Length: 562
Image 1 (spheres, one colour):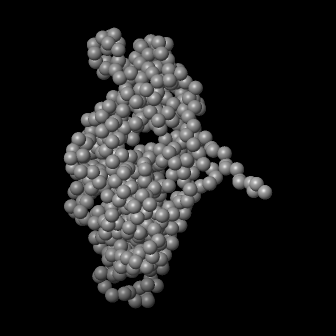
Image 2 (cartoon, helix red, strand yellow; image 1 turned 180 degrees about the horizontal axis):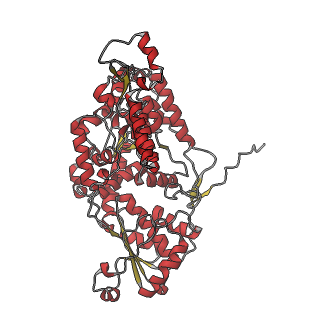
Image 3 (cartoon, one colour; image 1 turned 30 degrees about the horizontal axis):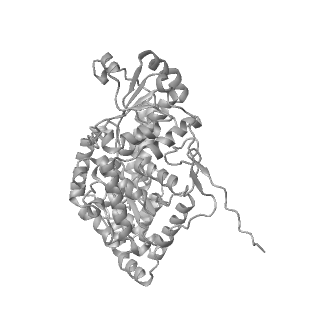
C-alpha cells in the first residue's frame, strides 16, 4: 500500500498535520548540522553505521544501502519526519510520478472532451492504419536441406510440453528441430497438465495430428506413439524411459555430444519438461525446421479451425463501415496476471486479500519467500503492470481509432470484468469477445479448456487489420511473428510504451490534445518498427525474417512506351 493512498491527498503539496507553518527562525535552524539539531532519521542512520562497523559487518553495508535507496526512491512511507527541536512535524509528499493508478480520474475528466472531439471528426485511424509498403516486401521462403531418417533413424525422441498454448507451441517446434538435428523419430508430444492453465487437452485436441505428420514427412519422421516392441522394453510405461535433464538454451553441439550418444545406446530418450531447451542461434537448416513446424505444420484441429473461421467472417461482416477491417487486443487482465504482476489498482483490502490468495494458489509461497519485497509502484513505473481495459481504450482513442471501430478482445476471465470492462465498452460500443461472437452452443465443447479457447482468440487476432499487445508473453510473440509471415513481413502491431503511458495517465490535468499527440507519436513509432529482422539473440517465432522469409525484388518502374 502506498503512503499516498493511506495518508496523502495526492495533490503534490507538502502539508503538516500537527501545527501551523514554522517561523523563519526555526526554518533557519534546519540548515544547521550540529549533533543536537540532527533529524531522527540521521541519528538512526548514524547509530546503524556505528553498530555495523563496530561489529566489523562491513559486508552488510551494500544490501542495507540498496534497501534504503529503494525506500527513499519509492517514497514507501509517503512522509518525511522533521525534528525541529521543540516538536516533530510529519510532512506528507506525493508518490513518484507514474507509481499510482490514477487513470480513472483522468478518464472521467477527459471523457466529455473525447466525445466532443469524436463528434467533430469522422476520421478513423483504422481506415489508414498503415499504408502497404511498395518496397521491402518479404515472402515465405523455407529451406531445410534435412531429409526424414526413414529406417535409418537413430532412435525415438519423446518430449513433454508444458504451459499454455504457445509455450506448448514453442516446445513442439523446438522438438522438431532437435529431432532433425539428431536424425531421430519424433513421437507426438505429450502435454503436461499445468497447475495454472489446468487444461487436460492432448495434442490432437488442439492441433491436426495427421496434417502435422504429413507436413513434416519429407524432413522429420513423426509417429503418434512408440512401436509395440519399444514399449515392451519399458513395460508399456513411458515414464520408465530415461528422462534427460538438459540445460536451458542448449546448443546444437551439446545435443550432438551429450544427447545423441544416449539416444544411440538406448534407442529412445525422453525430455520432460522440454521448454526453452534449444538455443536461438542454430545452423540455417535447423532454423528451417523450426520455420516449417511453426508456420506450416502446426494447424489447429478441425473443431477449432472451423469455429475460428466463422468468428473471423462474423468480425469482417460486422466491420463493414471500416471496409471489413477490425482491431484485435490481447488483454492480459485476468486475476492470475494481475496477481503475478504484484501491481495495485483500487488499493483496497479486498483486492489485496484476493491477490494474496491468487498468488498462493498459483505459485505456492513464491511471493512469501524470505527477502522478497513487493514494490507495486516500482513495477508500474517500470512498465510491468498489465494495462487495464480503460487504459487500452484511452490509448486507442488517442491514436485515432474512433467509437465506430470494431474491437475484438482476446482474453481469459477478466478480473472484476463488470467494473474494469465498462469504460472500454463505453469508448468502443462495438466491442466483441468470443462470448459475444460465438453462440453458447458453439463454445460448449471448448469450455474448461483454456488452450482451445486461446486458439480461437489466436485465429481471430491473426486476421485482424491491427493487433494490440498489452503485456508480452508467448501469445503476442508468436502472433506477431505469424502475422509477419502471412503479411509480407510487416506486422501492423501496437506495442505500447507503458513507461510513457503511466506517466501521462498520472496527470489529472493533462489536456486531451496533448495526450492525443503523444499517442499518435507512439503509433508512428510502432509503424516504423513493423518490419524487423531477427537479431542473433532473438526468436524467429517473433522475427521470421530472414530465416523463414526471402525479400521480394522491388517492382520495376513502368516505362513510357513512347
